[in-house]
Image (tube, rainbow, N blue to C red; front, side, top):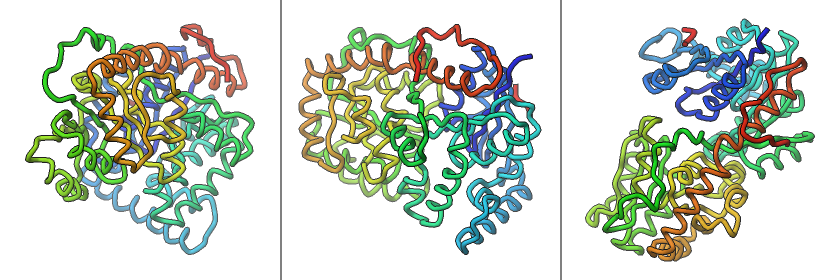
Length: 430
């Protein structure tokens, strides 16, 4: 009988490429894969991704426009649970309901899956996976993509939420068959904080096939005019390091143009306008909408330098490495990144694909851009990035670590990851 793995997410699949890569990898390795997730907004991006997938999936749809009654009930339950948490009620059930809207629906669905292993993606579904696994008497695992209790925009804004997340982590992480992380510094933090024996790491790289249509940077048409910088994220807004580059642009001058890729929410539109106003007359910034998944690398490859500017204002941002960094490498862009523990772990001094600067040090950023935009330096950095994105930071290099962790988590014989290129230790169900 084929081993079944159930992956759980509290968010749409289009914002969690790590989950999609894991599901694809497991299916290719011979596992029976089913993914359960919740969505409370537009699903077109999800549908475009899921239409191409051979594994099964189930969506908990609580979108206000499509299911207003379900949306209202879910919101009331969550707000009531939040009130109880703030009032000091410490039970796990209350914390779960407060942290994950539609926790009950996800839990019911997960328990109905005849899975041999459950994998929780992010903290809100940690308890869902653990309880479903316990009911089936099978193991569960946890993929810690972010340290959400140590994230300024989450725990920093609501102190009660930070304590709630830590309680859930203390309760469930030691029980997991494995806890994985996105960077070596994050893994070390989890090992120390929760006394875990080991935490395997697989970076948020993408498969080589995604970049197969791109040309080597040296074979691309010579670009005349300013050097084009690129920054990409799901949303464009404050707290992502953009303040640094906005302050640097007038000092770098007309030698560069910044291209921003992402959605501008109504809450951030005024913030963006304030920063763009002094730059608009000189045409130093171009804003692009969110790109379809199959167009992201093509869009980035039009530019020369990628910016990964996460501030070091909390442990999460300081210890992790964002997806954008690896996208830049695989698109063949030189990289400018903030000097954080996470970035240093993937940016050795001899990397050759760009440079680091201390977050907030605009003068250092200007100096780095001055050096990197020199023609000979830039070409060499792009070539180094291109090589790194194909030999070191590519999903085919990371996936054996993931498959090994899954195989070790299962109590019974499981499919062999024979299709993996190297060995490293360490239809919609609507």
